[in-house]
Structures are given as structure tokens and as C-alpha cells.
Length: 272
Image (cartoon, rainbow, N blue to C red; front, side):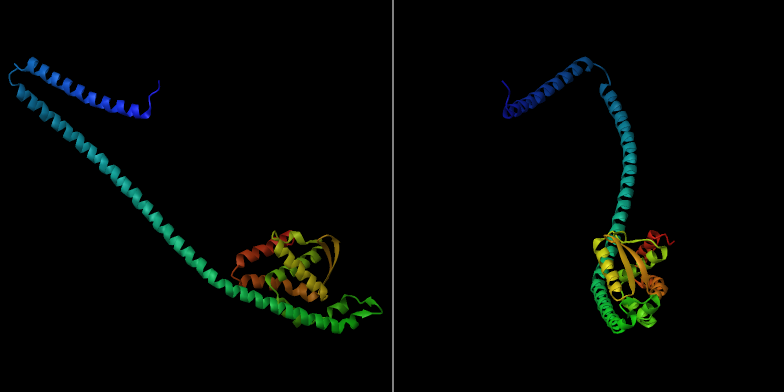
């Protein structure tokens, strides 16, 4: 029959008690036998004292050696602890710096949003003005039900209007216009989905290109869903867009990231 845990603990306790008794009895027997066997030896006490002295000296030497190695290990441990403390302190400083930087950027976000809203309002206002200008000049562009050539189109907007339009545009707006220029120059189709990995950014650029198309700054033909062949761009856009987008990127707080996006766009059309 298997023993229960309670029975096992009880037996173990009894075994410990009996072990103590046995060791004590054996020790007494050994002392008695030693006394009977060596009791008649002269100077036995002196021999024992001498042996005890030698043993003490040996134990002292062992203790000194052990202390030396223990101190060495302690020094190494303290050195490692000091290095770890330095790393923790540096990590704490880096974390504090990162937290401060993040807090600063968080505080700057409202300002950035305000700037984006202002620029978007300016862009909308500029498009409205250019659209009104186009509507006023439309009779000069259409004659006998047929569109006139690019020369007449180019006269719809002045260079100053184009310059103001580009200055009021957002970075993604300029990216949209620059993509049409690159497609026009390289005679390649413009695939909207290839302009960015972010669907929202693609939609924004698509909408901006549609806005420039609606005011006759850009013309294109849809080859298939989301892919266009750019057939016309206002010459002043062709002239100014590259300088404007690089200038905006260089002056921004995201210069490196924006310039990389521009060069990636150029590489997409083989313009590097």
C-alpha cells in the first residue's frame, strides 16, 4: 500500500531523530576506543596540541587564499555592477532625451496641423481663382466647337499665377504634379498606385491631379483603371515644379524623408 505524504513526512522526522542518536553513540564509542588504545602513550596531549597547531596554520593559509580569491571575485562583481549601473544611467538619459524630444514634437503637431490647414485653404482658394480665370477665358480656347492648340492653352494662366499656385500647394500636391511631369517627360504611363504605399496618400495625389486637370493645367487620357497617359502640362509647371518641390523639402522639418520620396519618384520614371 502506498504511503501518503503525511506518513512520509512522519517517517522522515523519525529517521532524522534516530540518525542523531546513532551518530552520538558512534562518536562516544570512538572516543572510548581512542582513550583505551592511546591513553598510555606519554606526551599524547603534546602531540595533539602540536597537530592542532599545524592544522590551525594550514586552515589559516587556506582561509587567506580563499579570502584573496573571494576579494578578487568581489572586485570583478563590483566592476560589473558599476558598468551595469553606468549603462542603466546612460539608458535613463537617452530615455529622458527621447521623452523630451517626443514631447516637443507633440507640442509642435498643432502648429503643423495649422500650417497644413492654412496651406490647404490657400490651395483651394487658388484653384477657385484659377478656375474662375479659366471660365472667363474659355471662349478664347474653344473656337467653332473645337479646342485650340497648346499655344492658346498656355495663355490661360500667367507665370505669376502658376508660381502662386505652386507655393500654396502642399508637399503631396507638388509630388502629384511632379509625377505628371516625370511621366510626360519620359513618355511613360502614370500608375497612381505606384506613387505611394499609403492608400490615403495615393487618393490625395489623385485628387490633386484631377484638380489640375479640371483647370486645364494638366491633361491626360485614362489607359485603364488608375493608369493614365499624360498628354499636356502647362509649360510653366514643367519649368518650376522641380525647383519648387526640392525647395519645399529642403526647408521642411522632414527634409531627409521628403527628399528620399522625391528621388524614389524620379527613380520610378528612370529620371536619375
